Image (tube, rainbow, N blue to C red; front, side, top):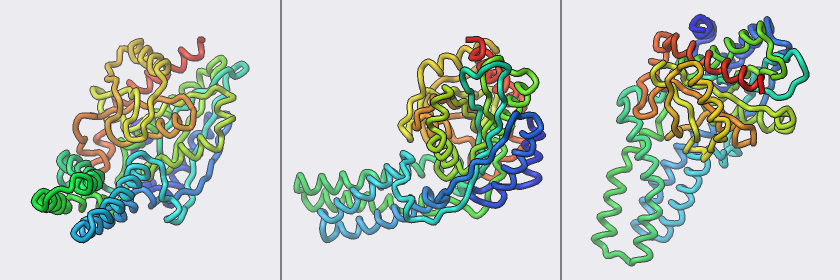
Amino acid sequence: MKQLINDIIMKFGGREAGSPQEKQAQLYFKSLLEKFCTSVSIHEFDVPVKAKFESLKIFCIIHIISLLFFRFSPAAAFVLSLLNAVFYLGHFVTYRHWLDFLYPKKKSCNVIGVIEPKQKTVSTVIVSGHMDSTKEFIWWYRLKHPGLVLTVLSGFVIGLFPFFSLAVLIFNSDSIISESGWWLFTLATPMLILLFSIHGGTVIQGAQDNLSGIAIAYAVGKHFAGNKPEKTRIKVISFGSEECGLRGAEAYAKQYNQELRDEHAICINLDGVKDADKLHLFTAETNPMVKYPAWLVRKMEDAFQSCGVRYFKKALPIGATDGAAMQRCGIPSVTIIGQSTEKLDPTYHTRLDVPACVDEKALDDVMKVVVQFIEGIDKQ
C-alpha cells in the first residue's frame, strides 16, 4: 500500500481539486482498478473549487466593515455582521455551499470500481477515499497547533460580533461598555489573517490525506477480487474534490441516490490513516452536523474487536469527511481515520504530509478491519 502512495506522488505530485494533476491521478487509478474489477467508470461533475476557502476573504472584509459601521450605527453593524455570521456558519462551517453561485466551476471526477459477487447481489459496500490534496494551510505549518486554535478563534470573532452589537442595542449600554467591547473586537481582528490567507502557494503531496485511504480501498478491492463475496457487491471509489467541500462524494451520492438506495449501499470512508495507535471510528461529525447510524458503528466496532485492532470511538470535533456527505444524502456511512483528534497533527494540510509519515501498520490494520467488516456483512 505504501508503494501505491509513493507511485501516485512520484507521478503526479500534489493534486489540487479540479486540476490536471487530480484528473491524471484519477485516470491512473482507474487503470489500476481495471486489472481486477468487474467494471470501472468515471463520474464527472462540475465544482466551484474556490467557493469554500475564497469565501473566507469575503467574511473577513465584511467583518471589518461591520466594525467600522458600529462607530456610526450599531444597528447597521448588527444587521451586516449578523448576515455575515449566518453565511459564514452556513456556507463555510457546516458545508452548505450557499455562496457557490459566486464562483466559476471546473471539472472534477470520481472513479468507481465495481466487484460483483458470486451470486445475486443483496447489498453493496462502498470503500472510499479521496484523491485530491490541498494547498498548504500555511499558518498551521508555521504555528502548529496554536495556528489551528487561532483559526478557530478567528471564526468566533466573526460569529460573536453580532451578539455584541445586539446587546448594545437592547440594553442601551453606556459608552464605556460599548467602547471597551468595540476595542476588544478590534484588537482581535488581526487574527483574521489566519482565515484571509489560510492557503500558501504549494499543493501538498497528501500522502496521509488522503492517499492512505485510496491505498486501503485499493487493497480491499484487490482482496475481494480474488476472494469474491457471495452476495455483496464491492465498490472501490476514489472521490475527487474533497478538500474544497466534500464535492465528489456529494455529487456522486446525489446523482446516483436512488440506485444506491435500491442496492442497500453503505459507505466505509477512509481518510488520513497515518498512525496505528490513533485509529478513530467516528460516531458523528460536528461541523456538517451529521450523526452516523448506531447500527453501522456497532458492526464496525465488532470488526475492530474481531481483528484485535485498538481504536477510539468519538465524534469528529472539527472539519468533515466524505462520509458525512454520503450520510447527508441518505446513504448509511461511517468514517475511519488514523491520527490524533485532540491536537493538530503536524502533517495535516502541511508540507510534512509525505509518504514517510504514514505507518504501514496503520494501513494494514484498517485494511484487515474493513475486510472483516465486509465478510461479516456478506454472511448475514
